[in-house]
Image (cartoon, rainbow, N blue to C red):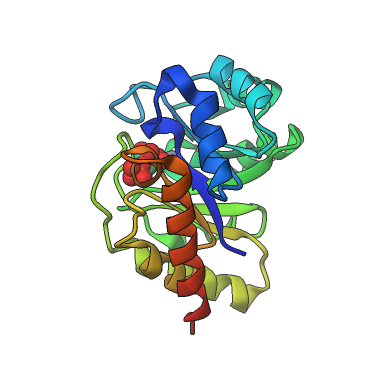
Length: 224
Ligand code: DX5
Ligand code: ZN
């Protein structure tokens, strides 16, 4: 099943509830929350208080993408604030297995993320325990960047490994997903599509979300 997860990073932070409501009206079914600490990535965004407010504003699952160092220190706070899904970067976790278990202990879905320069193979020992794998198709830190096509073979590889080993993780893609790239990521095997600029950049978020989802679903029919 294809799902659209709009990234609120590109929304008006003064009107987050309305932004989420518009995207939901267009068919979005997950809310992607980009958490940045100014250390792991060169930008600072939001923390648990905003997640807590969003929790009251929507029924949709909140997908918290932690682009932070030392995520173990903050996972309990995000879970308590109402996160449903929490993902951590492979590159930021010295004890990745422990961190993923910590997410699960807090009754959240656990995801692992890889940057554009990180191979899928680095995840080989955790693919049996994650609920989803997030493939970055830009270098994390900012919305509105250009899609890096190298993400496509990583998505394909993750789909192959899942089939070959009987795993059940879902495949999410994040960065530069827009009308001109959405068909490629879906054909490669991505199921959860994060989009910030393409949903909230200009025009009506409901119409933008609906158009992206329609393009994604028709590309899914062409998957081989
Ligand atoms: C990048 C973030 C993304 C970003 C996506 O660091 O993880 O979620 O907001 O934005 P677009 O869709 O504009 O590339
Ligand atoms: Zn993200």
